[in-house]
Amino acid sequence: MTPEETSRIAHTEHPIKSPLDDDSVGRLLERGLPRGDERVLDLGCGGGEWLLRALATRPRLHAEGVDLSEVALAQASAAARERGVQKRLVLHHQKAEDFVSTEPFDVVLSFGATHAFGGLLPTLAAARRHLAPGGRVLVGEGFWERPPSQEAVEMLGDFTDLATTVDRVVADGWTPVDGHVSTRRELDNYEWACWGSLAAWALDHPADPDSAHALATATIRRQEWLRVYRDTWGFVSLVLRQTPDRA
Image (cartoon, rainbow, N blue to C red; front, side, top):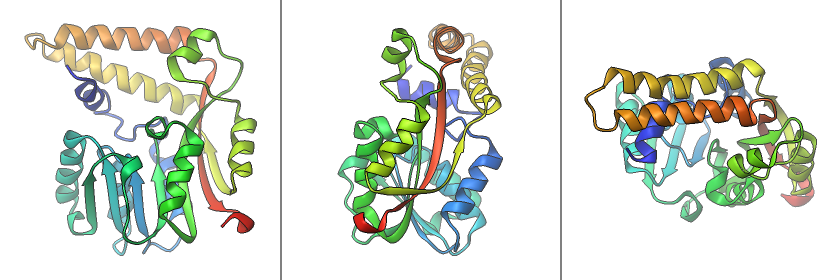
């Protein structure tokens, strides 16, 4: 089973690939899309769930998504047809960091994809290249709620604390106009959903040659979460605008 297939199954019950519940996603979209007729770009869109939700509730919205995964883009395309929004969605199969837009976007999204750019600030630099004057960026990033173990750092990455994360964003020329720190419930629900979905798939498909591997992966990931990073890792979502003297 490829990592891509593992991720697809793991997110069956939680298509937003970040520790956010539906209300939080809805509120972030409300703050990021105040007019409802914006042009929106998702860098690293995966299955396109952010764009699909935005399109479904805003009939004047137009969106584009970029991702390297053909499987995820096919999933996004099929879901767009099911929801009747396919005419307002354009999908690009390429690396998000290599995408070149012909005209700027009012809103740029990136959730669960900052690793593809090499971190939060490089992700914001990529977003800035596509952003129209006065536009907004919606981005999600991990942070350490308390000092992590070396094992946690090696597992998840070299994050900073919440205040330092926001300070770095501000120093980079951005002004937060809203944000959301994922609650313990959101963080736990995300992990239970991911590894529970993968384990359930394995139990439901005992004859599949990937079943044992999927079950073992679910067990390992659940143990890593509970034993290594559950009490130290957090997630922040930011709605950003460019600070005037840097715009």
